[in-house]
Image (cartoon, rainbow, N blue to C red; front, side, top):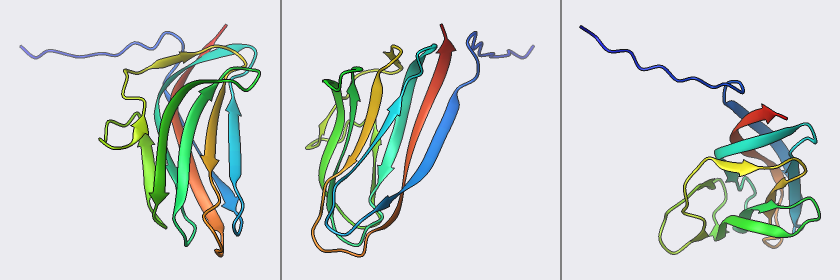
Length: 137
């Protein structure tokens, strides 16, 4: 007799958000994803890419609605052109949150993706993503 494993998501299926933003020559870039007022998110993980032609410091933070950092998910210096970072991350030597997921985020919270300026470059389009579950409140 076979066994069946079923997953029940009472608030809906997990969602994958992925988007592209432009990096500009020797300029920092910040993108905020804001949890809507009518929901909370359960964050499972995500990624951030450096698609510039110079190394950059990349970071992902959880912030409250007023912009205070609550959890620094990952900070990674000198990410080479074309490379990416993921979170949660337990790679030794990185300043990261190695805790468990999902992370519950209340309405108004922000997931902040940051690319620090890396010096003279051509810039370019770069990708970032988030795997989460939305729970309507």
